[in-house]
Length: 137
Length: 375
Image: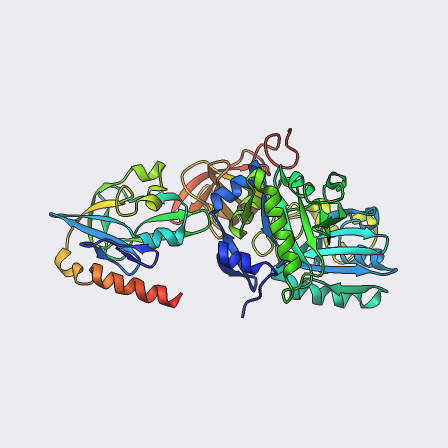
């Protein structure tokens, strides 16, 4: 689905900083939205969190960089990093080409999921959010 | 309201436009990476009409410019130019500029977009005591930087005159599409190239500018020319080790510290800042600008600290990933004890110390890239 140029998927949760999160059983997969990758354009560097590191909701868990800009990846959920997408280290452009697929960033074991989900947007709310941003531009 | 250049229409249609130095300029069209590659491997073109340009003419034009700037203006023959500076009395840098002699009593001075107002005021004030005429043509003349190993071949296709006659840093008059133009053998990429000036091309009447812009793009098609934005421009100039005013040099740095001391000719007679620069030269600088190559993972950015043995010794003034080299590169100032090539330092990239090495600039192999490349 799309708002303007920006793709989003059903069934995901979203942050205002354009991270997405997919609940997969008792784990959550995290990535960057299409909007974020389009803003950065050509992503050339990713600083990933370490497996075992703790995340705090809406605190930085890593950074992505284009040639000219740096952006934080904010954790949509608090918890512990179970897995990171190591492919991104050598192929950061996966964040551009497949933000909701091969360009996923990390999998976390959430520690306070039920509470924190309430603070995230569902796909419908995110679509509205994208609309507001696109109109401002 | 931000200003526009005469080819703004093209940027709006084809580029990712941002405001820079009060102008709506493209940061990229296709992307920073393909644009950098085009310039290093073939040819790219930048709209640099936002830069400041001023004719200085009259009986005392040479004498005035020789007093205004630290480089040796009388040494310029007709159609020759050089990189120079505006320094203040303290010897620190008001702007970096290029002066080109078009005729015995006619010089073109080109300066940074971000310093337009400041420089015009500065030059106008200093000119009071001289018999010179100043004409600010920044909004009347369009300027396009055609850069890369195929830059001259591109411009030659549409120019009546022989562009190979234009020396590095020299200039010459050209006729393109029947329009009055000139070109200088200058740029901001480290590559060979021409900066093409289109006359009588104000923003209100941009057709001449558009015509030449499009003619160059057409001519460059066989070389896969790319229109290039400010993003690639900044990467390319840093790969070449060139200074960006406001980042690497400003009115707190001197040309000796910035290691652009070839612009200073202390024995040429009086000029603004001479006394302060002579004193600093005699005493020695306390810090110097160096190039740094990142050995670890990370991209250095302006403002990052340069660390040695746990102690902060300086700051990065420009940093980027070099798409050509595949690693992070930076410029910054370190105390004079350290600027030796090969010396290791750390750059604090956010919370991590990343190892870097002081290297000479340009960062690339000048036998393979840049204007001195071997075929």
